[in-house]
Amino acid sequence: MLRTRLQTDATTGSAQTWRRTLGSITQEGAAGRGVLNLWRGTSATVLRVGGGAAVHFYVLETLRAREDDVPWSKPVRNTFFGGVSRGAAVVLLCPITTVKTRMEASGAAAAAYAYRSVPHGLASVVRAEGPLALWRGLAPALLSSMPFSAVHYAAYSALRDELGKRRAPGPLSNFACGAAASVLATFLTQPFDVMRTRAMLQLVAPTRPQLAALGSGLMAGMGPRLAKRTLQTATIWTIYEELAPRARWLLNR
Image (cartoon, rainbow, N blue to C red; front, side, top):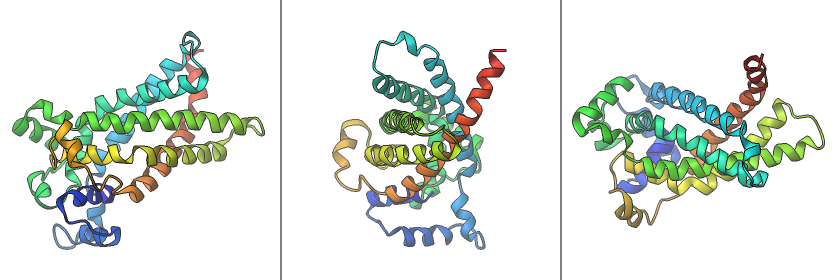
């Protein structure tokens, strides 16, 4: 929520500090909602994160099963696997991401996209703008998520391998590697994440005009996104490393 507001406010000319933006969010909507406004769009977030992780790791496991057939060095292979697996998740989950972004919007966008739920949002977009509108912002989303996952998986694997030379991997070391890799990947892909948010809210025209319009504010919302990505990605990868060996054992029985 906070990241989306900071990124869109930078475009509309109403940029504020994160503290003021946080205060504005809690004062919106029906009286008495207060801090509950910060959880607007949570249902879409849960669907997006859960579904995205499922697709991402399924494709990643499929690729890793064939890694001996790929004649590349391990860093290059991991970079490719990370980007492709995340790209598949982005394409499939883009409609949910579009609805989520609009549910978190402010100002005129909030009034235009007053979705009651994820199904209502999906139906509203299709009815008013056509099915393809659900994938608006797909190109910037791919430019944000694929490089993020590519850099993250390559860095995470390298850090984990290095630590593995000194001690056996465990939940704490996996979390630390995931967090460190997330910081690097978030910083490198932040401009594309801003582009994705603005494209989904139709704040700027897509493709070339969009690129020309994004001369400023490309790092808007960096703080909230960094905090979210670091905690979320590190946690997901820690859980994955704990569950994946058990899942492989069950499937191979």
